[in-house]
Length: 185
Picture 1: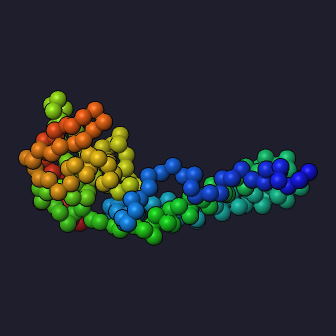
Picture 2: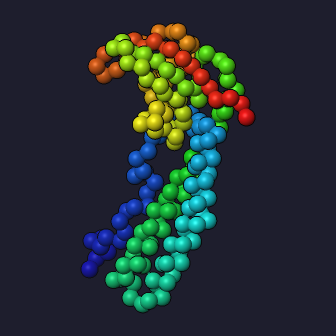
Picture 3: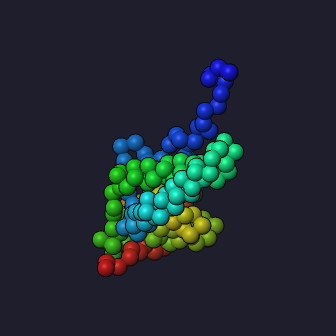
């Protein structure tokens, strides 16, 4: 059969298929010291523990003979590609990282990266969010990315200010109730 019609791989080696937030062009990958440490820890876990474990399984499975129907071998090779892809991604993110310690703004009432803000919308609902890096966001825990519309609307304003947030359903007025930063260590 002609090689043009044979599927050589599952095409899973591309870094382009990772659906994580992109860093805006010309920007740095801002992150808190805790976020930077978390990514470093994950990278070291993959390199020092997970990858060697999978390599051991793959080499054992390869020694069993026929690889075409060897589930351990096929799954192990796929898992190895996933781990290598994640290692490349994390390495790139760390290379672009600009660690910003929000504690330098401790005591300030102006909103910058790392601030924890409590604000009230027009309906009287209070929300508390922390502005963090793209790789640290967790909306369910109130951690929003510094490139999010809410964070951009709040940035550089102060406690007591009213800011305008453009939403798909129209303009919303937010009142900043409280701004805090972690204490220096």
